[in-house]
Image 1 (cartoon, rainbow, N blue to C red):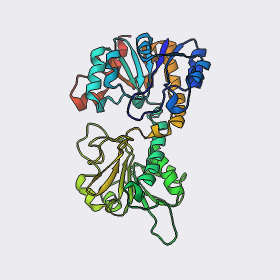
Image 2: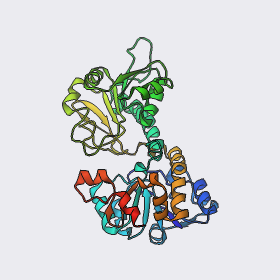
Image 3: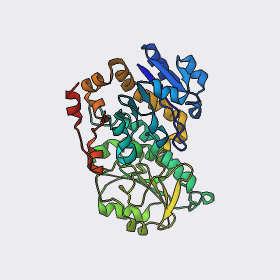
Image 4: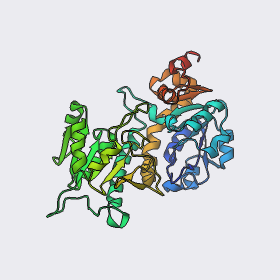
Length: 373
């Protein structure tokens, strides 16, 4: 198969879908790999690194025109709509429920879209989302350290245990997931009081064994959440919110309970999601204030650590990319029910239920699609 690795054009997106070692693996299995010029530069990989791995360096238009599968990191942006064509396979983070216009373009062009974030494993977990979630959680806490500084508009609290000073409180909603664990690991290691809110006691018991004693575990309910809002210095949201829900965990009025100039870090970055006042921001303009509360809601935190993120992401997605390339897309989807979960659209038909419900679009179940193969 001819596979194209393009340079990401989203604001401050420095990751690359395939690192040179992943390219070499694909080339060794007989596939032709195009890599766009300077695609890896943001992750400190040169064109020469890719050429040594067996890739062909090409321009953007050539790659989109010649490739059978486009191997990306982020969603399709308007500048890329013109390249979409029937039968083209796109493997990337699609987030179709958050980008209606893009979804409509994908459907109209009849591409085959497979989203990393919806691929599952035998345990119902998300193996292509979790590696970036961990980095997002760790990066989100590091952002709190940075933007909490007085010189960056924060309260000037060092998120660390310092003798003679109140120990900062970090509250993590959904803290037993990959992003929450990532945030808790660093926050706790710096001596902060960390409170994790979750709903599953069994999972909380498992996580408790992995984290130090300065981490407290509470059931996530309204009473405990409101109590935490009053004492927390940094509130981190790490919960995957169902996009069809209309309610919230933290309402805009709840912000009045928080300390002035305390901070919300929303790792999930769902507009109007678990935290009503949150909306996506960029690395250029990462923060804003509502009710005196600083909000940090950058939707591609891992890009700040592009080299690490690219290596982790590439090796998580490589087995799936190879399965599609080796077997062909239809056979791969038919034989791998976990990969099938990532199918967002197929030649003009929307196959992701969450997106269909949210935007009131016609759904064709994924199982119906594979029946025709």
